[in-house]
Length: 169
Image (cartoon, rainbow, N blue to C red):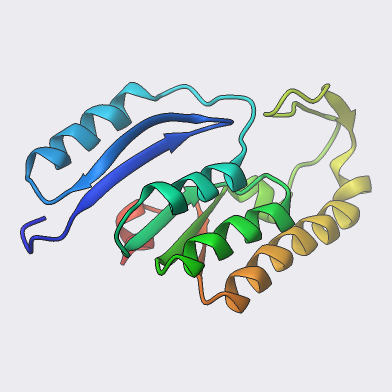
């Protein structure tokens, strides 16, 4: 903003919950901070791809679009949404936010897994399903990473236990 660049914000789950039009005024920083503070509870479902298509149509000037998400959505649809943003001239950076437990799956003993998006709970022995989980997880990440590479979208995998300032640096 101090360089007369515009900044804006979109907050979404399965629909756009809040949108602040890009602006180069200093007030937009305060508005964005206030909006981020309002949304503290995670929602059960996301529809990232449709939101990305909406952003591609809504943002009038070329710019940098930064997505912070766990990316748990249909990978092919997600990549199509990123493609749409790139096609409209935006530079896109994806910060793939992941918990250390998702990255390493280090649990032991009987564990009750509860889905974040409405799935029924499952009790399992993580040691017995770790290999299958890691294979699925690696395929999921590979699909997204490859899609980002193909359309020249920057992809950054983020371990959420790391300080945000280190990740952004």
